[in-house]
Image 1 (tube, helix red, strand yellow):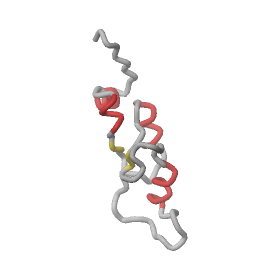
Image 2: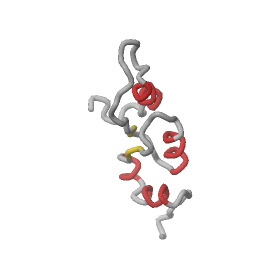
Image 3: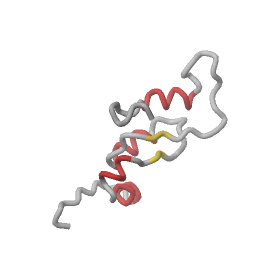
Image 4: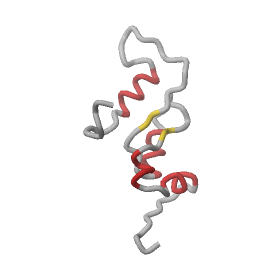
Amino acid sequence: RLQRYSRCADWKYIHSVANGTASADTPAPTTPIIGNGDIMSFTEWEEHKAMGSISPTCMLARGALIKPWLPTEIKESRHWDISSSE
């Protein structure tokens, strides 16, 4: 909350938490970890899912506000750049 969009999402940290390697004395979590932040395209969605150990999904937030068609782009596994005339 304190970041207020001033920084990019730290997906490496999310991955380390999901693996239980954020700190030496922290065991791997038993609850699913769902990453969130800075997903603006289908390819970024796939890259973050491919990191492994994170839940097989990611949350969309700002990306869906900027590109309301982003969920459709991800569902159809394609790039969809809508112009203002569409």
